[in-house]
Image 1 (cartoon, rainbow, N blue to C red):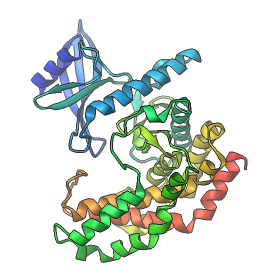
Image 2: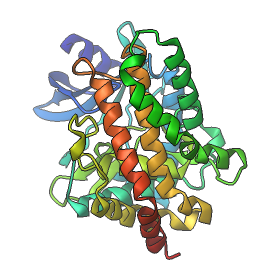
Image 3: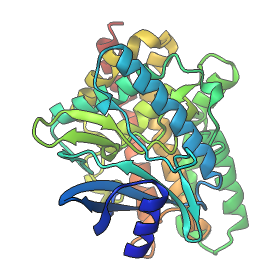
Image 4: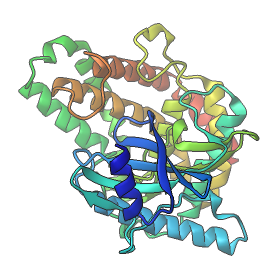
Amino acid sequence: MKQLFTELAEAFCLEGVVTDYSVISNGNINATYDVTLTRAGEERHFVFQKVNIFVFNNPTRIMKNIDRITAHIADKLEQAGKSRDGVMHFAKTAAGKNYYMEEQGFWRVSEYVPNTVTYNACDDLEKLKSAGRAFGEFQTMLSDFDASLLYETIPNFHNTRSRIAVFMRHVNEDPCGRADEVVAEIEAIRGFRAQAERLNQLIDSQELPLRVTHNDTKMNNVLFDRHTGEAKTVIDLDTVMPGLVAHDFGDAVRYAANTAAEDEPDLTRVGLDMDRFRAFAEGFIPEITAALTPLEIDTLALGAFTITIELAVRFLDDYITGDRYFKTLYKGHNLVRARCQLKLAQDMYARMAEMEAIVAAIAGK
């Protein structure tokens, strides 16, 4: 690996000698490394990432999207007299590209932001609020960017209707003979289908606008200042493309406000923590409210339920079709994930009115 990283460092015009590297384990999709380059006794850290081209089969489009939005955010920060530390910086090759293709894969390199930390789970309400502000500010910075200029890097990524339709087709095909194991889960998804597809209907009727959205707003996609505890920047921009604000809000809530990990096997531990929900909402909503329509605000809580059902469908679909998409740590891991997300969605459905009331109060409605 050291020789490969040396070749990559040269390709990205990085100065110094590769002296160390380690695996960064966050994330289910790409292979990521912390690589140390040393020059004149001074060490600098970079994030080297090999993009999973099975999941992202047109990675050059991803990198073009990233180039456009990071330049837009950097310009806005500069115009406002703010530090450009609020946006990711990607290294470029001699040809001016922010990616490099070689025999072992598709690579990109970003600067390692020092004195930062990420959290896979966090019950600190102030940090959750700060994460909400970071994601809200990210969307606000891009609220005047024409979403149609971005590639849809994963077609139908948050198209819940399409996800369910594909899942039901795979249930009927049952390529791995696993459908009989998950009859209860299949029926639960059928029962929630109409409510889960409500946002699709509002897109079809053009009542909800497509905006530039992150589409993977997990807590561990925010870098926090190790000393102050404040959010510094949003990371992992692979899925930035046209989407719904409700999906971004919802996915963040799904991840951060679950009382257990997203692959918790003991379903009695799984549920929606309303204090965490409120904390994230108090950070996110004030940052973005001025840019949203009233209906967008009204559907934020529905977004949490929708995205949770959608992820349950994706996990269960992957299980039925042979565990080809998500990394798994053990046999049946995707089934455990699916059951966990279904339990969380059921709790969200039961608390929908409470969630909507909190959103309305924060938005001043």
